[in-house]
Length: 169
Image (cartoon, rainbow, N blue to C red; front, top):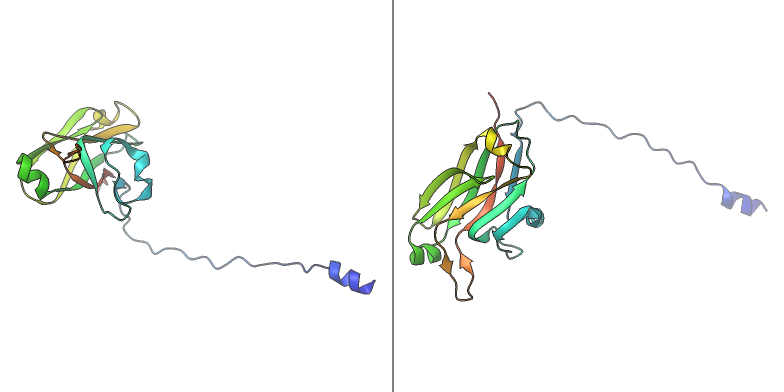
């Protein structure tokens, strides 16, 4: 009987709260909504013309009209940012590529790229363009494409694209 009584006794476990640490004060990075192509969650933002990539690739091929979407607060100031490669295999067959950057159907910038290299683009997006629709639909229109042997149109190697909030200084 005594053995049964001891078995049924359970010790009361109590743990103290761990020590809390606060981060040192410093300059915070501006909030961003950048979609990185190698991340597994990137697919939920893609609307059109961004091809699936290899699991370990740092970029994805685009067709001529890649489109993505995000929810943004249009009251804030936002910069559209993109990192991409203009690949030699495409440029050799098409010549220079003219890329038009669009947000909610409005052109926010146009650049022509003639070299096989990594490129960065950024432009301040007018607030009225962001207010046109939610979620915000954005991307690029590329004037020419390389038609690969398998019939797929290839244009750019997209690394990341999205928005960074403007921080007043």
